[in-house]
Image 1 (cartoon, one colour):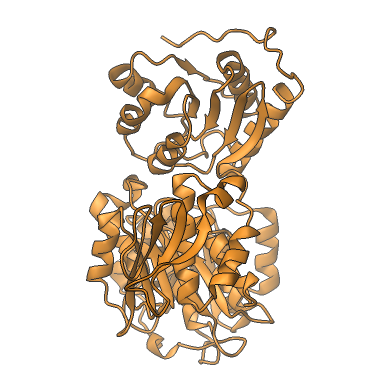
Image 2 (cartoon, helix red, strand yellow; image 1 turned 45 degrees about the vertical axis):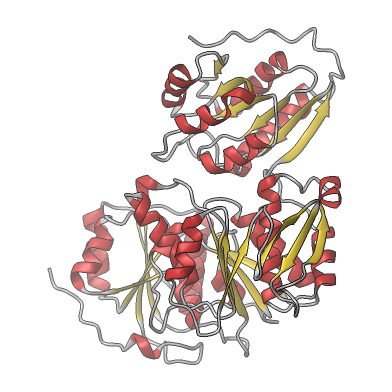
Length: 513
């Protein structure tokens, strides 16, 4: 096979105004980030080939509009042939491509540079003039909520701020926004971080960064816990002002200690305990700061009271941690304490993250469909007792047995859904045989949640919480975690919302064998 020969010095491509014309680029994948990369590069008059397994009709049509070439479908060897014929100078890899994919193996063998859309966006961040400062956020859980809250606080303080990246808005779309931004709050997944350089022209240098927490997730993709943690640690590289870490998760502190940051960058801890100097934390019923005020060695500045946050359904332990992390990031960005308070006071939690759908007959129905792994589900379970737990989906190689052991005492019952039901049922049988466990094995996705809610309604009594916190991905039965959450909420409103306190007509569920 003929191997491409690099003809461009990629290290010179560090600005929107660099010479991008004629650069031969291949974009792997035609999802949101892949199309955004192709759209950006064709605007820069690069020669763009898109290689994708599948794409929507709209994306195919838009590919023709922007002037990119599309190689759609075909076997992996056929895609390699298309890539080889294009002879790219650089390949843009969409998040989630398996590390051992034949296309990536070919690029490595051929010595072709592989970038993520994050690296490309960093190189192009000056399109509208003075580049926005970046605030980088990762972690196994809480990324989206913390990114949204951070951007909201910055906006409340009068800055032009946007939450982008893994949150759903491609960074490349944001850097081309005509009016520009003061801050981009960039949510980064482990997939995105895995492919990002820590040094060189494409290495990002955020104003502030945080790894919120670390627990087993996506181990099937990364191959090991160590590889997953190493990817997450990339978030701290080249941080300028504040590397924020979770005092309760020693791994995040180690990441900061080992990070190659900019001189003068400070390590800022957050946690639900008493803070030391340079920390955020909790004293009695107050969330406080001892990091960015003049007398931090002797005094703490009050930020919020727990009662204030309880009134707004923001006092669950994991939410308090998110608030403290966002407070640290925004204070590092120069936000005043008054603006910080105003931002949190006006913040609304994203749907599907500990969303109270209904409280009827003394039973609370909570949608935490975004709890797609054990760590997130554990946070949700820790906040309720007793609970009817809806669990299951795609486990992504993670063992749920420790989660079941940890929370068995608070479980009234469990309802198991999804493709990987057998592993969950087996874990209950081994570690919590006293818990009634019910199984919904419907392959008709439209009827999964109505059946789940019917079962839960027959189990839950006054004082109970029915909690959808699946500890698993959703794509086996639903389009996304949002689709799963919407279907749950709809089923709850239809089945429970109109029934008042009368449960006499609800059939009694029978535990699975």
